[in-house]
Length: 271
Image (cartoon, rainbow, N blue to C red; front, side, top):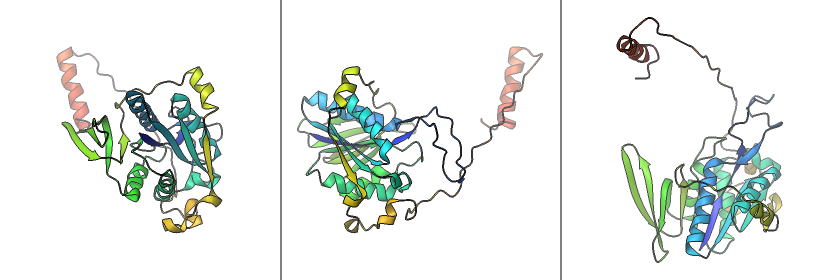
């Protein structure tokens, strides 16, 4: 079974974010970069499926600037077999539609696949569009935000569980298909030292801008950068958080509880 995992490199969730002087992007100076956390669930699930079957291939693919190679190496150290890096500095500003079109084209060039996995969203831009766009571009079914994955015995169908308000829903689709992965699907493994050493020898194919044929995709070269993006950030602001402390004094527990409920309902308006 050939499993493709779409990954993205994002700022560390614990990084202190500052707005750049341009006002429409973040200051990346000194930022630590990681694999987008939801993509880690996708990598782990792909590796688990391969291990359960005892055969198969896990291929990572990302589109981004040169530093994105670090995210691929992390996935390779976890256990993926190979990777594809569609690389250019301008890709840091490419919109989800164009990213999906280019990734879809590269997936087609693999000569066949059985399953595509990716995270439910990219945490830096808070968008979950890429995976769905790729599925639509390839003409395959997709299931979004899955928390459980099970292949049929003949490996021709996949059954997934999704969390919904008040319960779960189970969806079955034929393969090939694309799934976007939610927290709770699994517990991503840490890359072991042997895994890190092996990752250095695993193949990483690099695809440069000049080798991307945009005409069949209905794109222009400008669409692969900030200038031709369909979605543009015009302004970023760091929210100002005001912390307030209210102490309920001089009351017995029952009376204090009533006062707390009143404050939560009338002032905080959270209940």
